Length: 212
Image (cartoon, rainbow, N blue to C red; front, side):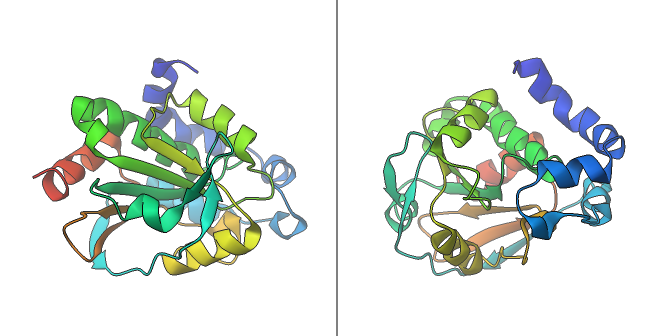
C-alpha cells in the first residue's frame, strides 16, 4: 500500500462504502452474529466531520496481550510509562470506520515528524479470534506503522476486559464507534475523542494536550 493510498483514504472511503453491498460486508465479517447487520449507523458517522473531547478516568486491566510479532505486552505497563499515549480500537476486516481510524494514526505520525517518537501509539483489535499476530502484522505494514505503534490482540476474555475498561464495548464489533484515547502521563485522566478525527486535527490535539 503506497502513501498516496493512505492520503486518499479520507477522500474516497465514504464513496467506497456506499458502493459496498450489505451482503458482501456480512460475508467478510467473522461470526454469525454479524450477518445482516445494518451499517447505516457507521455510514452516518462517516458523514460527520465534527468530534468532541471529554476527560474520563479508566482503570486499565493488568493483563498480557500479544503484539504483531507475537511478543507478550503487559498492557498496564505499556500504558503506565513516561510516554504520552494515543490509543484506538479496530479490527482488520472492518470496511467502514477502521481503515479511516488507522489511516488517521498513520497520517498523524507523519504530521508530527520527529515528535511522533515521543508518543506511544496503540491499536487494539476487537476481533481477536481472527486478528492473530500475523494478521495484525500484515495490516500494520500496509499502513507504514513505525516501531512505536503497537498493534495488540489477545484472548476473547482479555479483549472484552479491555474494551469494557475503556467504555468501548458495544456488544458486537459491527456496532463499534470511532473513539480515540489520549493520555498525558502527568495527568490521572484520559482525553476521549468521540467521532472520526483526521490526521491534521489529531496531530493538533496531540501537540496541544500531550506535547506542550
